[in-house]
Length: 112
Length: 115
Image 1 (cartoon, rainbow over the protein chains, first blue to last red):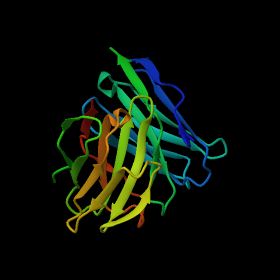
Image 2: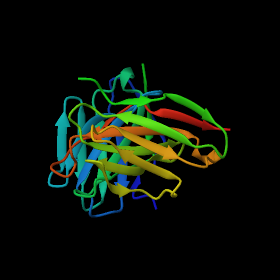
Image 3: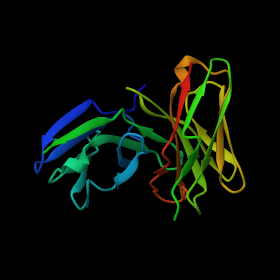
Image 4: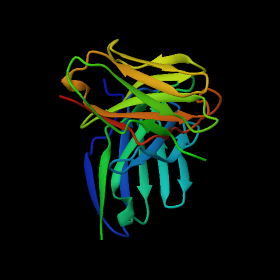
């Protein structure tokens, strides 16, 4: 049972435009959410996180939005750059379970 | 500060064999988690260790096991390898996800191919 879903396997965006990556979850107990970026032949790299007490968190070009009622989070990248081309994973956790559940990833391609 | 290191980076085994993968966490990190990544499945949680104790495990058969040493280094073992075990195995370390919200830092992974 896939508790964290990324329904778009791929996304293409023009350089300079906004990239929006989406993630849905089913477990209402999740209270911490993260986004990771992964390049080929490397491990995932942490990007940004948000706890369930917030609905928005920003870090430079990256903003994560959390909609708890819809059990939905999204990652906005503005402006998108060719170096952002990678696979993006969202992940969720319940505090105290020591376990992170990952989505299947969305491959972002930023076109120059 | 050195990152998470995993050895070996690549491994080729045949069905029925067993394999041991190693992970050295970032200095000071006491929690180590293992994940299996296969195409289309994302990262599947295998288990998490803290202070040599397994605190949680995912839905994998008993052929998958792990341990953590007193210096926080961790190993995972897969016995009686099957073709479907071919995957990228990722190790991640964090300070301690129980005390506050902590992100995990990943190693580069070990690519296991089972023939």
